[in-house]
Length: 405
Image 1: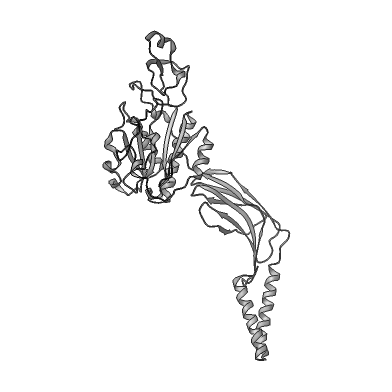
Image 2: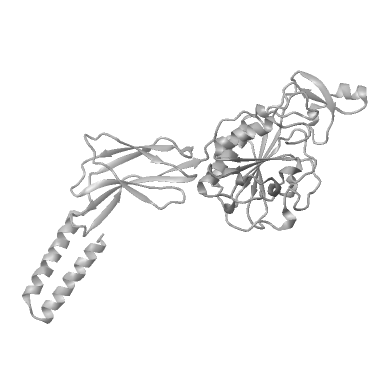
């Protein structure tokens, strides 16, 4: 393939040839002939190569965000003159990149590390043999290996849901995952609509004349809702949105691993309705959150405001075995996102985690704007996902039987 430099040289040769004919000047034809000979030599240097091979191996088909993909390239055969190997790769939402590779020595493999800073599909490869003459007149790229795709999913931090247990002093159903029907229990309580019928103690209910539910010594949680704000204007930058997705993934994965029904509520900007997804496996959580992207748009109307008291609140009774609602959003705006009607219950309990730069200071904490004085919401501002998980655990441990402080 002729390059832009080669096209310019060809145009100059053609112009000199025309001028030599028009002015009948052999002196103008000599540089034109020399240029054409140089173009022919460059084309011969970049003729298709044979006998050059390569093998591309990727260590893993998926990895968490922020890690490096280990790549091994095994070149085979001899490289032709004026040729070198290149590795092409394209990250999520990034332009393609072609990296020159050092020449093989004694057919030893080349080991590289390709960074994966963002979620999505990372394309690694193909390995390309690039032939180019010294003058840069012709260039030929030959693919030696197919491309590999690596799924970059959110980075998950280990979290124990035992922080949800509030102890035997709580009159409601406790919070922990993996309920056990045959576990020893130490007390009974009145049946609350939404409780699992399998936990009803029928013998004691028959004696007392009312439905009684067993309370396990290790309280349980079977529902775990998390809401993620997708409004790009809520975040100070793409990096903070990635941290918000990592925080959401860590909470949902912990819930799934402990047997709870993890539910993700997507809160898009504008008038688009929210979406809810229930997960039963860790792979489902990672796959779904790998595709999530921030969007631009205006906030919802005044009729769709949340429990901060700015709009309607539909009566909704939260099941006793449901964990507090966790809202993950950004700190670039004073208010938190609109919640769907199913989550705006009078007895709902909310923990709002806002991602903001570390140097933002206390200006991101505005209780009047976020409705922290309502008695049901705990608002915390974190700098990253790990910080957010620590604040979430502390907020859960401070939970009392009447709501949040």
